[in-house]
Amino acid sequence: MSGAARGTRALHAALPPPLRDAVDDFADHLAGVRNRSAHTVRAYVTDVVSLLDHAARMGCADVSAVDLAVLRSWLARLRTTGAARSSLARRAASARVFSAWAHRSGRSPSDVGALLASPRAHRELPGVLRADQAAALVEAPGRFVDDAASQGRRPSVGGAAAADGGAATGSRTGRDADGATADATDPAGAGDTDLGSADDRTDGGAADGVDEAVLLRDRALLELLYATGVRVSEACGLDLADVDHARRVIRVLGKGGRERVVPYGAPAQRAFDDWLRHGRPTLAARHSANALLLGARGGRLNPTTARRIVGGYAAAAGLPRTSPHGLRHSAATHLLEGGADLRAVQELLGHSSLASTQIYTHVSVERLRSAYRQAHPRA
View 1: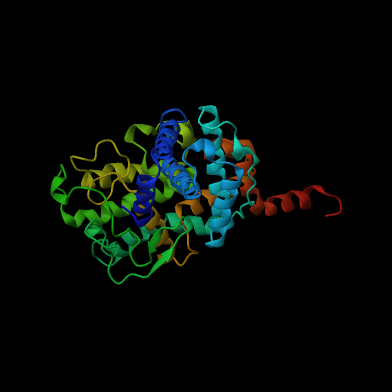
View 2: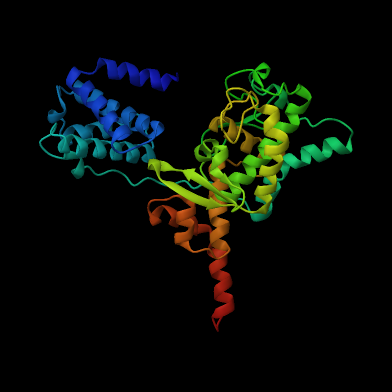
């Protein structure tokens, strides 16, 4: 458990019973009624516990005593401790959601959060790879295999065979856009957190084949992320049955439990075929179940490891620092630059609001300039 999680748990335990019960009921509402993911519920609860801890220190015994002055003083205190504008905007949004729920559930006489203003978050967009850079990234695992074959040795990616055995050695780390640590010398992602051991594999795959299997897995992951623009959690959550090879589409369960179908191309299909025929059987273990992508120990691939894989290959290929979200951003941008309709991109990405998709248009100016040069008589 992280230090932040322990801190939230301690604050929660110290709340007056009425406030603690309100937090618990709010969490149940988010998970059971709003169908929010565990990650989303945890984020809301962390913010609300912080708010109610502040309210309790101001003398509030229950939720009905939390008024606009309490909300504003909470945000002011966070600001004085150095919270970024984006953090303040997110926490204000959490407070508004909690306040609206408290009013609807009869715990508060009014929705005080509706009057709460918050700073507009400065939205930092991840960098966008050029099309040739994206191609170099997704093809990077294949180059390890080709180089090894040309030198008459087995593929090696800096310790992939022991990727579940601990941290990488001799690594230079950096932060990707999602805040995950990327290892620049181990593209395969040392530090895989899957449970189990190599002895659990149903086929007794020898260690000699693990390196190549991990490379095939990495190629499939990179192709999947760039070809479909799915979120890293969505990619890691895919099961074998979610891939329709005949139609070249995947079935994705996105935020809020919304399901969508996303197409992919021939390069991704080849990567899937190689992984499923020659890679996955080597890594599969009794606990693999139906997971599409596996870690080196046979468990479902962890999103943190997936972030490390993307960042590692980008560094090894000499590309700008990149994360899975950066690949998602690149895929959306390249679609728009290729002439795709904004609403089609919205559907592919699983955005509930078109406004979320419009952030990708800022790098599509070249497409507009091209259309202008072709169509305007004074171009």
